[in-house]
Image (cartoon, rainbow, N blue to C red; front, side, top):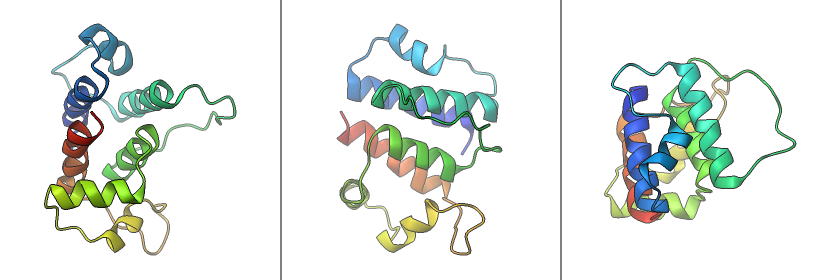
Length: 137
């Protein structure tokens, strides 16, 4: 999924879930831009989202971001930021009629070097973003 599409959908999620004003959302996600968002910028934005939703982590490591940003990394960071549990995933995907089986989800959250790792498809990530708009609001 394109980085710009992730940001556009995150804007919708934050408007729906937190009743934030545009200025507050700009502070978290940066001002809206039609230009391409780099992987480094998206990683930083997702980290800022985690900090906003969960608070400052004083034990956080200062490792460089995983690049390039994949759907799997976005999904992992969304899971942390919005504290999504497996029950939440089941409810979200069932009601939005996503065909992905729960046993497939664990492969999306594994490290890329793991033998059972699978790439997260665009449609699954979009389902999660739509579900966040609906259920985390």
